[in-house]
Amino acid sequence: MFKNKKTTLILVVIVIALIAVGAWLITKDKDDKTAGTTGSATTSGKGEEKSLSQTFYIYDTVVNIKVFGATVEQKNMDDIQQMLERMDMELSRTKEGGETYAVNQAAGKEAVVVSDETLDVIKQSIQYAKEMDGLFDPTIGPLIDLWNIGSGGDKVPPQAEIDKAKSLTNYKDVEIDEAAKTVKLMKENMVLDLGGIGKGYAADRIADYLKEQGLNSAMINLGGSSIIALGKKPNGTEWNIGLQDPDQSRGTQLGTIKISDEVIDASGVYERYFMQDNIRYHHILDPRTGYPSQNGLKSLTIMSPNATDADALSTGVFLMGIEEGMKYLESLPDDVEAFFITDDNKIYATKGIKERMNLTDPTYSFAE
Image (cartoon, rainbow, N blue to C red; front, side):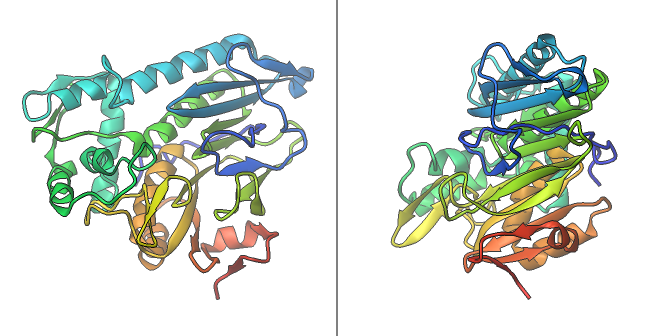
């Protein structure tokens, strides 16, 4: 189904800064308590235990990367920073001079030539939209702009404005010419927003780069929403990841799970939202209604071999809800696990997750 899933991720763990902006998942390991700062990387250990840690602020979030290996060097972090900056410029809809920005400026007028990388992200976005029947939709930009949740929006917009923005949200109105490498939005005022898979795509590209360099142990954390554990720890053990309690302050966990060669991606209603008439309006918008989803879910965590897939699934499957979402995940040809947390603190998990998760907070329990 998803084109990158057959690429096995070789993981490395990482010290995830527990105070990272937007972090949802946190490492629990004692050896993961330091992170580099923007600038030169922090070095520790020797031989295969040698590690470099560095923190970047990009994609409007804190990115933490920790790489293990005798040959890891500052150049690797510099290369990764250049990759992140390039992709941020290409994929951002708000950065003037970027490719996605240019596509949006030309909406309803003309096609825009883009790079192979941007074309790949847009093609994958459209494919995910088709496979999830539009629940994941990369043209949801008009609705995001209208609600503006997390960036100042604090009230429900007028219905007429919601209807207008919803009419501009349709992935079928994106025209791609692969031969010419062009993208055109068919209606004026359409807005392509690649935030739904941008971080996952970037995480996968970083993982590919590290493997090409022979660095097969690392933790890649893009703001907590896309985390890749490449391989295992240098001592051969799995990484122990703390799972954020969606009702508590950042760093408070409801349980732990051990991972290796895997991606964790989470979506939830608890970080960006406002309250109106005792209703929580959060940032996960449903293209079908034009409103934030109200399906009784607090959060959804996807575990997958591929970060791009996990990023898209965490949005689309969240909007499906538990019953439909579970069926959809079970229908996928590759191994994808997940767990849903409902408003009544029940956890609905796929079989593989339920067997691996260690709940430590009695407030939460697995649903029967």
